[in-house]
Length: 221
Image 1 (tube, rainbow, N blue to C red):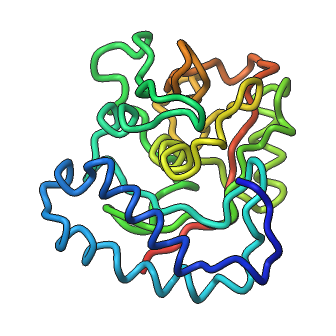
Image 2 (tube, helix red, strand yellow):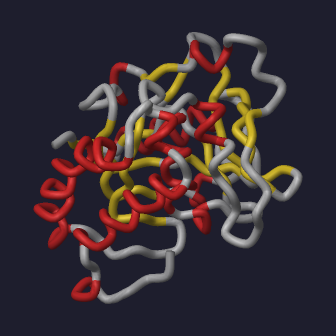
């Protein structure tokens, strides 16, 4: 996510790029749609992205103006993770085996991170949050809330890596506290075996290589 002058950021072109990425990775088939129907499903979001384009910060390392998010209603979590890669690598992402059978389904958005649409929406002003590397996750969550921002869900973290593989770097990975299952586990995406991995850590345990991803707002069409 190399920074560019705001005048060069074209929200419409960026939206089209992200839709093309999803199509190339097989998301229409995962959603049970053909390419035309899939494109039509996402098309209304384009106007929302363009309408906010002038006010968006341009892309920068660790930051994206917006990402198109598909929920697990369209693409199962484990399948979506398998379509992620690092910026410099081709190994497919995966889910940590420490998630016991059925655990992924129990990690759902909190009241504060509930999606504005059950299938697809936009997440604006996304940051991977490397400033929180080494911080206790609970403290990072509190700081993000004080700033009026929101932690990311599992689906949103996968979307960030899908559309911006360079958001995931060595020692600059991120937790996804917007999805919880009622205990003290906090989902996170980091690099393992030279591929993205969806794992979890404890809410009270800091990790020097895990920040806390956040966003300014969510919007449906």
